[in-house]
Image (cartoon, rainbow, N blue to C red; front, side, top):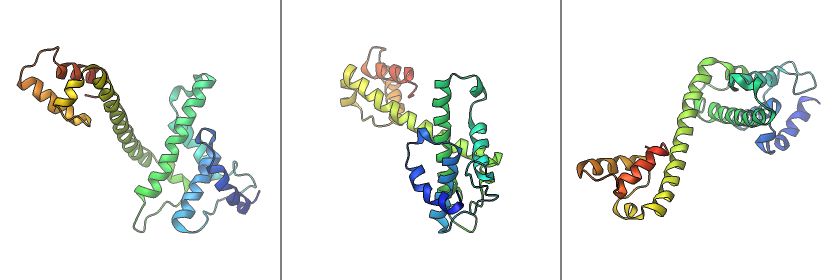
Length: 199
C-alpha cells in the first residue's frame, strides 16, 4: 500500500465504530483532521508500505500505552477490550482537542504526531478532559436525581426550581434557614443527592 492508497482508505476506516479502532485508525483520523484543517495531506515519514510500521502509527501505539492504566497487562480479556475502547475514545478526543482547541488559530499548528506524546500536552488535555467528564457525570446525576424526586418526593419539584446541581445549594440554604426536619421533602432530596454524589 502506498500513501495515496492509504489516504483513499481513511474515510472508510474512520467511519467504523470506535470500539474497533486501533493505533492505525487513530493515525488515519489524525491525517483526516490534518487535511481538513490545512487542505493538504500530512506527509508520513519513513513510509514502509504498511501504515502500521511507520513512525506516526508507532506514536499512537505509544500513546495508547501511556494513557492505559498501569494494571492493563493484568486485566482479563474483557476488561482489556473495554479499557482499550475507552483509551481510544480519549485519544480521539485528544486529537480533536489539539486541532479544534489548542491550535485552532494563529500561526501555530499541529506539525506531527510526536506532539501528542509531550507530557505537558498530555497533562493539559487530561485536566480539561476530566473537567468535561465530571460535568457530564454531574449532568447525568442531576437527571437521575430529578427522576428519583418525581417518584419519591414530587412536592419538592413544585416548591423549588431544580435544573442543575448548583440549584441544590439553594435548597440546602433553604433547609438550613428554615431549620427543616430530616423527613422534609427538601432534606430527603439532599440526602439522596449526597448518596448519588451530585452534591
